[in-house]
Length: 498
Image 1 (tube, rainbow, N blue to C red):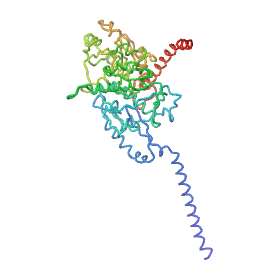
Image 2 (cartoon, rainbow, N blue to C red):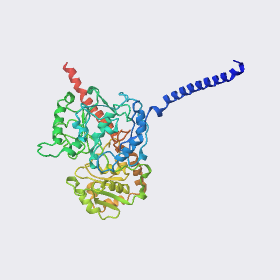
Image 3 (cartoon, rainbow, N blue to C red):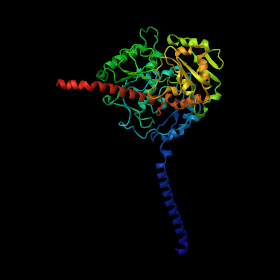
C-alpha cells in the first residue's frame, strides 16, 4: 500500500482515538460531579405540618421514584388541607407558597452530654396514644414512623386541638431518635431509664377524655376510665415508679377533666397542665408541676400582615361563651357592661358556622383582646390573641401562665383585677387611655414572643414544645436543689451513727 493511501486511515484512527479518550474523560468528570452534587444524592421533601417542614432523606433505591412523585405528593397534601376548625387533621398550609425549607438546627445526632434533658419514654401499647387516633401499625409495632408524614395520625381539629400537648411532646421524643429530622437538641429520648433525667408517660389523656369518656351501649365503664385504671396499675408496678414514688415521672393532663380518676393516685408525678383550677393544692402546684400553653386554634399572623394601631378599628374584642359557672360568672357581668360600648365587640360565639375563622379575623382587627376567666382560670383565647398580635387584657385573678419564670407577661399583656373590671366605665376608660406608642411597644413584643406559643412538628428552637422541655429541665433543677439542701445534715447524722 502506498504512503499516500495510508494517510487518511491514520488520520481517521487518530480522530477516533481522541474522541474515545475525550468521551471517557467526560464520563469520569460527570460521575465525579454527580457524587458531589447535593441535588442527585438528597431529595428534600418539604412537607408542612402546621406551617413547618419535615426534612426526609430517602434511600438510594427510592430516590428516583421520590423525585418523580414529589409534585403529585405536594398536590395530595394541598388537597387534604382543611380550614382551621373544620373537620379533623393538621392545618398543613393554606397555600403551596408556604412550602419552604428552613435551616438545619443540628448536624447529625444530638450530643447526649450537651442536651438539657434525657427522657425515658415507656413503650405503652398504642391504645394509650396513637391508637386513640385510629392508628393501627403492623403486628408488634408500637409507634408510627415519624419520618413518614403519611404514617403519623392527624389530631382532631377544632377545639380538640387546644389540649393536644401530649401529642406534640410524644412526636418530638420519637423524632429525636432519627438523624433525618431537624429539631432542637433540648430533649432526647434514651432507652435506659437509669440514664434519664425524667420519665415520660405517653398517654393522650385529653383525647381520651374528649373522645372516650361517654358510655356506649351496655358498657359499664368508659374507655377513658378503663385506660386510666390500666395506667395506674402499669405505672405503680414499675420499678422506675417505685424508686422515687413517681416523682421522676411526667404526665400530661392538659384538659381540666382529664385524668380525673387517676390524678390522685399518680399525684406525686410532675403534671403538665393548663392551670390549677380543678386540682387541690396537694395534687397539683407550681412547686412540682408545669403550666403549658394551649394549642391556639386561630391562624397565626405572619410577618408584615400584622396590622398596626391605626389599622385596628376595634378597641376591645371578646367572642365566646358568656354564661359560665364558678369564677366565670364575671363574663356575664362584663357582657352587660360592655355590649353597647362604642368600639367594643363583646358577643356570643362558638366554633360552629366558621366561628374560629371569624374570631381570628376579629382579633386581628382589634387593639385589645379580653381574656376573661371561664369555668377555669385559663382558656385558649389568650394564645389566640398572642398569635394575632392583639394585646391581651387578662381578667382572671387565679390564672397561672406558661413559662412565667422566663417571660415577663406585663411587657405584652394588661392585667386587670376582676373587682376593678366590673366597675362601670373602668375597663373602657383604661383601654382608651393607652396611647399609640405604649400599645405599639407591647405589639412589637407580642411579635417577638409569639414563637414561644407555636406547637409544630418538627419542633423548632424556643417554640412551645421546646419551651416546655426547658421548663421541665428547670423544674428538675429546682427539685434537685431542694433534695440536696435536705441532704446537708441528713448525711452528717448517718456518719455520726456509724
